[in-house]
Image (tube, rainbow, N blue to C red):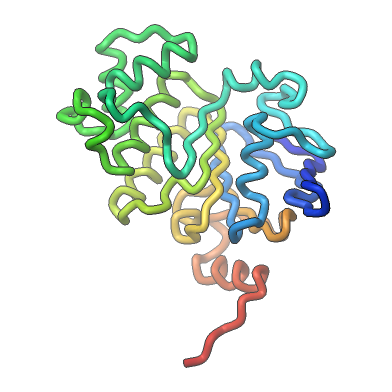
Length: 238
């Protein structure tokens, strides 16, 4: 569902992404780990068609993003670190609006079902988004992806700022989407959450994919050590 072939992005004399080769299949959750500036967000922006590659190619469901950006968006849902919803509208109204943009006309019963499936409490359905916590807003984002019947989910630091309970709930929602065959690519700093939710994990540095692991085959401790070694962080002795 997601494929990149030697995907490269250069800004003047800075290489933001350097010949990235990546594949995420239906039902997989792939987590990209890396420090700020590693190339994670650039990768997602290229897959979304927000920016053009310097060279190489990106594909969503076998469609070239550069050539068929509008068509690829039919398959995509995107949840950034700070999800932009209309604060003066309720959860129901936001879902109805964004589903309409995607060409989906939903009954109120359908809207309720999608919000419920995304884990939002029923007493919040008719409340304004301005009153929501970040975790609640992310659930509305998942509901929008469900209503759109998205096949690919792109996430940029979605658990940043969430408390452990909300972060765990978000991870459970990703697993539900995985069971529906959704291919998920998540950029994150959170090693623990990556280990908990991912099928595969990649470590990026300086625009390059340096390491790749099958999540179930590596312990959290070993993942952390590999990450620190890749980043070349030195142990601090107090």
